[in-house]
Length: 406
Ligand SMILES: Cc1ncc(COP(=O)(O)O)c(C=O)c1O
Image 1: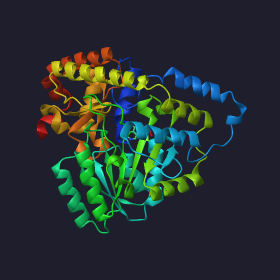
Image 2 (image 1 turned 30 degrees about the vertical axis):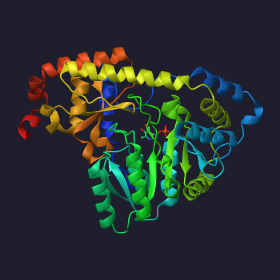
Image 3 (image 1 turned 180 degrees about the vertical axis):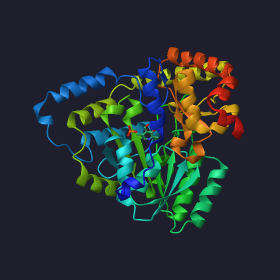
Image 4 (image 1 turned 45 degrees about the vertical axis):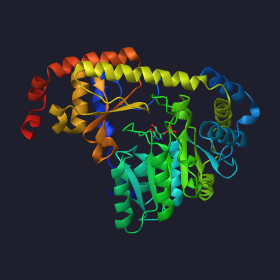
């Protein structure tokens, strides 16, 4: 039987191959260090959990909630933007709470895309950036992921040569998977370009609070005039280690926020009220837990860069996000990221995410998530060292094709 139209637009899940291998290695007793998925391993801070428990005991919190988020939650998000970015938001018209930022992004795509609309999307990128639009019937044109001068050249070309003219451009800094960051000058140029060309800007700022060089990532909405064209998505998943709670936000341009709210009003009744109340408490409450979380990732980053360098693999130190974007060592590059990732599971008990899972231009890299503790990361470094020392033999025995293709 033919696949359904939408399903046909979704390629097989690349990570599945690696996940299967990881599961069978574990079943055979291997102690796999899993730096593959970006699932935060730390618990949600206790005061937020307490608020959830307290609220769930109230009998008036069990019914349908508000699709675009309870007022207090939207006000708390507006207060966060004001304190963190100096950006003023109207909680009634410029803020919507979403079931995680991923849902918000996907439904924004549903809300604004007409069949065949062209959307400019970084490659490599977090999959929903492209697939949200593909599922909504749009077409994707790839842009470079790095926020440098090549980016704007490619952007100009894309606008010049896409028929129909692109609807929107997606940006994600700090980037998943590349961990690159953008500064306010980049956003100024982007907003000026977008206004001149009537392009919608969708900014994914899921890693707003995970940065290591003392420079907090800016918001695109800090740029004067950004509200004319831009919406930004943030997430509680990483900031407060609340990934399973499914709480995020979209904020910015009223017309776009209105479109998303309207689509959502047909699809959901909002997150469970106790989750919204606890999320409000998180945003309004003590913020030390964010600094503590940042410090944990910082130390893990240092452990990763240091122990992998000792093993002979120079991984550029990410300035932000919870990932390192590691070029595949030269002698394995011909394997591609999936085969290299499989080799790491088999020979180094280490799981990483193959770069091609984030787009074809990611195939020269793997993404390493900082989701195990420092000891485990250092253990991964030792495993790697053993593996890399015997690499020539491994390559020859395990993947004879690699030698032939080089
Ligand atoms: C760039 C980026 N955006 C969005 C998300 C999804 O976040 P949420 O849990 O808020 O849906 C992730 C999760 O890994 C991400 O890396």
